[in-house]
Length: 346
Image (cartoon, rainbow, N blue to C red; front, side, top):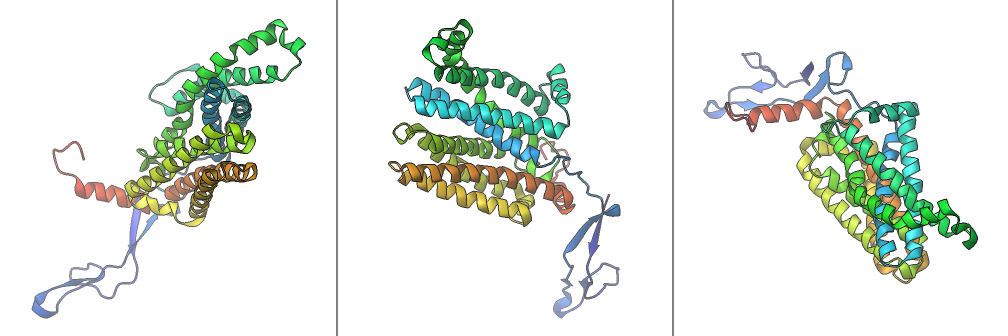
């Protein structure tokens, strides 16, 4: 339940409407209604904010890096770039481990993650995402295991189990690459499927923002750790991801309506401004620093930091939109005003 309170009005009409002033030349009336102040009964939000800690924002970021790095690692393997392949595979494994760690920490205990694997529910983004992550993880880990084996002495590499891991490295990396795009995108679907106004209103563009952000971050990781001579694909991946992220974000703000305000205010606004600055600077540095190892590393770090800021900004914007009843009530009234009886599309 929501109350709509009006501030002090300049006058009250005979019919009791607040702020309505009648009379004037030609019998015209001048309506002066102060801006409404939306408050819910007992100060409770209409939409309950997601009960998540910042672990989930970190989970969104590290999952994107893991997915993008799997794609980059498979491409580097097929094109004969061992330095880039090694960085991407290790980055994928490390990011995936951190991602699962953040998720389990937010859940409270590992058994809750395992319990989600008891059923597969196609209508639940959480269930689908859990299965996608569970399928992607072992293949990404096997590909990284093959990379570890390649660093061992030659005599060890000939040992049966280790040799098998080395042989399966490329096929496992390709399967990991095929399952990577859903890993990067499903977290956006998970957020948009909630009733949180800022997340739900961004449901069309948010997957593109997250996928572009994942590509920028994983490409940035490639620039940060791989030799300059092998960093071409990482550079293209990073710049392309940054362009997609920034373009999709602008389009998202246009389609979100009133709730887009939350991306520019308070904590979320600071995160999003930092994300834009870091992403633009990182992409520009990646383009001009083709022969500079130092500039490539700085650009890669900026792109990764920008991607993290994007996830933090989206996370904070969602929580802010759930706390303020305005972002629930106003869009509902706008939809009601547009509704035409008998038209089910409204």
